Length: 365
Image (cartoon, rainbow, N blue to C red; front, side, top):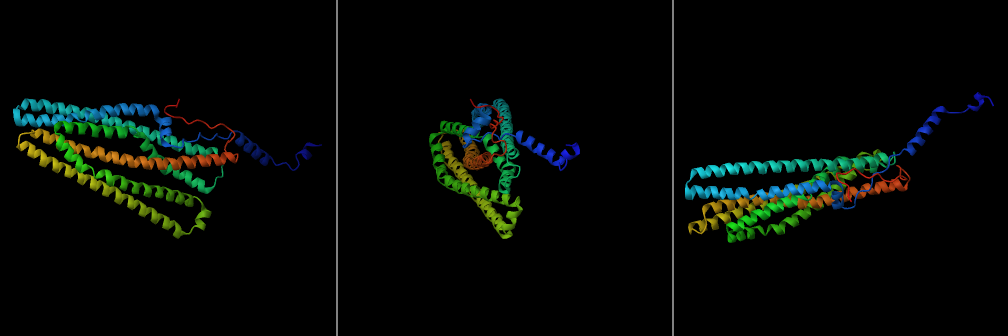
């Protein structure tokens, strides 16, 4: 048969297209390994050795926390009793050196935490992006909206929490423990009075925190629905403008509820701190008048009460963030694994290939 008749009806462009499609199927990017279903295994998988280094640095930081309190007490007592100005100069110089070392260590700790946070955020975003690149090239627009939400909005809060997941409670708990031990050393009864004023916070903080968590979880779900709606023209036509505006209004109400609860909780905690200081002044002033306590002890005690405010507030914020991070990570991991499994069952995105293990800071044994 002549060559011109053999090629009759052939479509060179279609042939090239078929070859490209076959090549694309053969070289499909493997899907990333599934995310652990819980947050703690993911923290261990992604940042294990970094968490160990953060913990070591944290212990050094909170052990130094009590040194300035003792220096304050000695400076005041030397000024009142001994009236030796050269001793005050020496103690102030030591105070300045301790404050400098303490500040530099906290700076290093915070910068290191920031690096770990950005590392985890990058890891999560890459996993979601690789899932999209290795899966169905024409996914459902609802999935696309969820993927965009996970890459843009949901990864960063998880990364920020993971950076201090272990070091933050150790740091703030260590500060509380060392400062409280020092306050007991100054005067036991004054410490017990301050602790009694502190007890109500163990009641209202968990209740208010639970309300904040429920509102935050509902807000995440609404944001995902809005993301899906914005990326799907058909869905945008089906859902009226009034429905989207109602979702936005509901999100506004939830966010305002979170703000009101959070700042009301901060107000109550700060007011409790002022009551503790007033109690210390009343009882400590009485002890000074009857010569059972030096004035430097009262000054150090009040300074210690003030130092308890920040770590206690940070611990409250940590447990709030812990609950929220578990919720956010569970939603992200479940959704990511469900999308990957659905594409795998449909035979898309290199489902026959073994999942590629993610790069992490330290591989799990």
